[in-house]
Image (cartoon, rainbow over all chains, first blue to last red; front, side, top):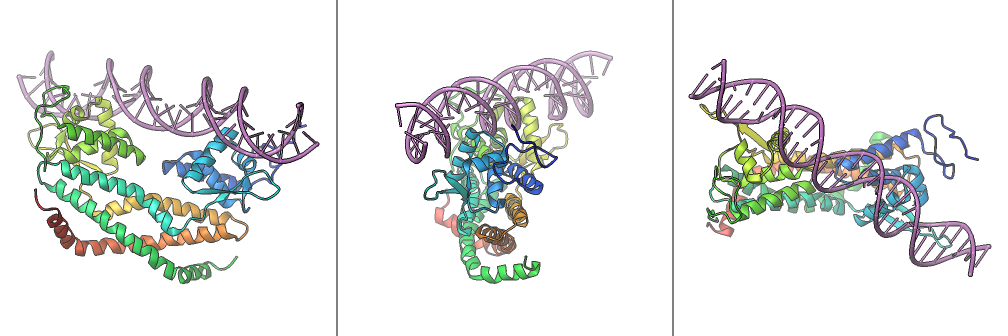
Length: 182
Length: 182
DNA sequence: TATTTTGTTCAAAATATACTGAACATTTAA
DNA sequence: TTAAATGTTCAGTATATTTTGAACAAAATA
């Protein structure tokens, strides 16, 4: 016999795992759309959104599958993607043959670096354009300034990461007391 | 700087406009692929790539159309896109009913700002995830640190733009003499 | 050995996006 | 007024991407 949905809204696939709150389900969808605007797949956003809000140390393939309501194939491919870009990592437990997944808590430096990748590509393309020009005009000037700026700012950003490491404890403490504890 | 080859290797669609060098045609395609990786359309990259390398103050719809070999409809839509995001601007000349297009030479500050847009979206999404969690764990800690870092770095980046404005003349001068004039 | 668990793979279907080309609108020129 | 120039719009087509679902593989268990 199939079990009926407990929450009157959208029925759950099964009752194997505790149901997610309506808010979390909604967040998972939002995260999917957000990842899409970042050029990734909607599914990868859903999976990541689930992993960072599920309040569990790590979750199984099937648990993810149920949370985001997708096929095994889709989950399999998506997890591979997310692990490839180091957004997600796998764990396992002795006496358990399942693989468990959790968000990778990558360092600020790493995040900033991948964030800079696209900018670098763009900047390098502008530099190349400059070499192809046969006359000097305000476009040449602009191309030169922009590509130089990105080169310069790249260096400065690396310094900023170090600076953050030294001040972050104070900054975070201030932030937490501002909002009050939970 | 390189000199333009007049005898195009691959036959052009028409001889209305001077042929582009093989190198520039190749760059235009590269630019298309690059824009695609940035989440934009290939055609917008081709058009922008043409505009920044064409060595003309501004070019007509038809000139663009011939350079990138696309339909009128595609050029029309693409130019609209590029003007929408302020990568391209239109000009006109008295006694000439055509519209001419050229790359917008936007300020460093503006570029940095639009570059930050996606990051801000991502960071805000992580903040929201934090509010949905029902327990404190290392994911909460990570979410808090990352979103705080982005908030902080946003401020610092605005300072960097000011700093750039004060040093850029020296920086560019150094850059130019490094490479030597051609 | 046979069966169950835990996934992976891949062809096909569903979906989304970009591009073309013809019809249309608008303005200027003849 | 007619014709030419300059684009725009949009339906249909072409392409690319994502997702599904069934078949498959490997490992553990009965």
